[in-house]
Length: 132
Length: 345
Ligand SMILES: [Zn+2]
Picture (cartoon, rainbow over the protein chains, first blue to last red):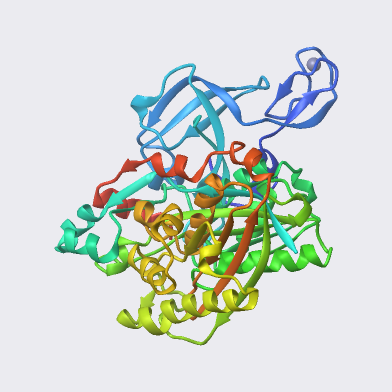
C-alpha cells in the first residue's frame, strides 16, 4: 500500500529519479533493489547507474489500479530487462497497448508518478517509453 | 562572451486540432485557423508537466554538450506553469539529472520570456567565471479556460541550453539586450487556474511594441542589419504575430519559416521562442548568424545575436531533433484533451 509520508519517498529519490542500482564488487552483477547478498555469495556492493535502456519481457494493461494512479488509467505496465542485467517493473507511457510486444526496446523517461492528494507532494520518477 | 554549448528540445506526443476545439466551442474552424495561423497544438501527457518537460529537453542538451553533469554549476527554469507555487522545479530537475549538490538553482517567471532571461543569467555567471556551465530552460504546459480563444494556441513543450565559454560553443552569443515596461496585457493572479488577457491590447502596445523595440535596440547597438542573419526567430503567440514583425523589418520567408514552429505545435509560452531557436540550431551551418527575440507579457523582450561555430555540425546528430518531436504525434478528442489538462492541477 502507499504510505503518504514525503520522507519515506525522499529516501528512494536516487533509484526513482536516476535508476541508481547496486553492483556486486566481486562478480559485477547489477541489482536494482538493495540485496543482502549476491548470488555469488559476496556481501559488498557499490553504487551504479542503469542507462535506462532495456527490453520488454512481459506487459499488461491496468484499467483499475491503486487510487493514486486513477487519473492516469488505463495505463500499461511491463517487466523490463535492463541492459545492465537487472529486471524491473515499470509503467510504459506514450504508447497504446496494441503497440507493445515482447522483446521491444524501451528507454527511461522522467515522469509524474502520482500526487499525494490536493495539497501533498507531487512524486516523480522513472517510467519507460518505446525507444525513439 | 559566453555561448551555447548544447541545446535540446522536447514536445509531448499528444495533439488536438483546431477543428476538434472549434466543434465544441461552436466556432468556425477555418476562420480560427486563418486568424491564428495555426492548425493544431501539442498537449502534455497525463503524467507530464513543466518539470518532466524540462528534464527531457535538458537530457538532450547535455547529450549535445558532451559534458559531465557534475560540471554544471547552475540550473534555471523559466515557466508560468511551475507545478508548485512554492517548491522549485529547478531542484527536482537538478537532482534527477544528477547535478550533485554544488550548484545554484532558481525558478523564474516572466510570462513567456522567463526562459530566455535565464540565458542572460548564465552568460553573466560564465563570463564572471563563477561557473563553467549553466543550464537555461524554458518550458510550459500552458493553461487556457475552456471556450477562451487561448484554447486554440496554449500548448506544451520546452527547450534547454547548456551555456558555457565561447571557446567550446556550438554558437557564440555575440550580444543580448532587453526592452522592458509595465504593460497590463496578460496576467494570472495567485491561486487562479487560468490567465486573463486584455484582448486586442495584447497586440500593438504589448507584443509588437516590445518585440520590435528589443529587435531595433539590438540592431542599433550592434550596428547590424536584418540581411546579416541567416535565421530570425520571434516569440510566437500565434502564427500571425511573428509574420507581422517580420514584415516590419523586411525579414524574408527563408529567414523566418525554419523557426516558425508555432504553426505545427501552437504556443509553448516559455518554450516558444526557444523552440524556434532549437529548430534553427538543428539545421544551421558554421558561420550562420541567428537573431532571436522573445516576449513575455507584463512586458519585456530579450533579444540575442548568435553565430554558429564549426562545433555545431557534430552536435546536431547527438540527440533527437525538434522535428523528431514534431513528427511524433497522437491526436486526442476534445474530451480526452480535457482529461489530460485536468491532471495538471
Ligand atoms: Zn556477485
